[in-house]
Image (tube, rainbow, N blue to C red; front, side):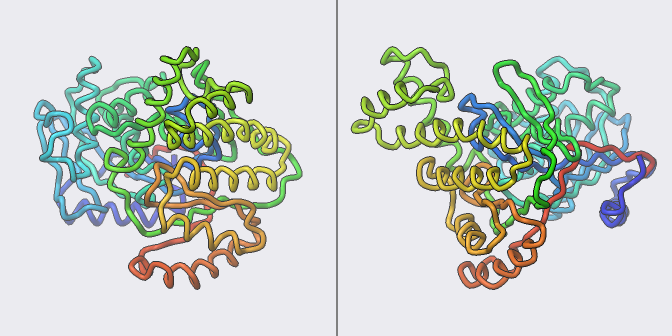
Length: 413
């Protein structure tokens, strides 16, 4: 596939970096993996809900070529201070090793660790340059990188990647077992399966993916990333871990109380929900708030999905906004910079909905905006956000996203 116009400047940057740091990539290929924009249910994956979202045009690029030296040599343009990551395929630090806890290379080591543990024969390494422009939280930077690395290592070693759900499982293993991040599968699914112009619907009961086009007659709109300029250090170090543990604690309490459930999404009818709230509200108010978000977000999910099919973007936006308020007040997973972005967006006519994205605390919020109001949103953010958060006045960004393929490969670089 020929390189897109939007990628040409990145390719030029990668070649210059390759020459500067001495990591050869000539004659290799570039794998580009997307970010994601979840329309529902954020934090639903580890609670058992169905999921819906799209791939978006903030990317991780990995330019690489295979080597027969049994080594991996990678340099990240985003973390130049870490230098060239250079190691033997057999020399992998132990999972969650303190020596690499703050180094982006923990994802590289994690991929090799998991692939070998799962029985894949990895004998060939890669030389490569990594570059990304995904915000540091909210649009799945770590999942994009991990998927890219797995697919590239597979390619270098002649391993077929036909079973995409297996790739999702492997990517989750890297984060769960090696990094120590308790992530679910939302990010990996929404990136790996993403198709240009289509929404991706995941049904966990069947482990199935289907694609849903936006219904005809929809108003012209954009999905907008509101990058706060903040960087979340990783799900393993964030409120995400606490929220997941709380949900698991509530499931355990309910099972002991005789409820036949395996996750919070199994609480589907209002009578059961009200009974649980009455029974546990006084003793476990925080856990009940978590359930309240998941219960109502799951109900809103089907309203949003139907609206998408019908091209009713206004309803999609309204549901997106309601989910954001639930994430803020009931799930309590957002952060001050994220909510400032949402507060600003709500003041702009033509913004149909807004909320935080991703794991929480920091990173990016998102908005669903009528196309002719995107500039107005950008102007509002430019005016108000630096006043509220001057520390990030040179770091924030507003990006109107395109719906793109999750993975593309360019040959002959």
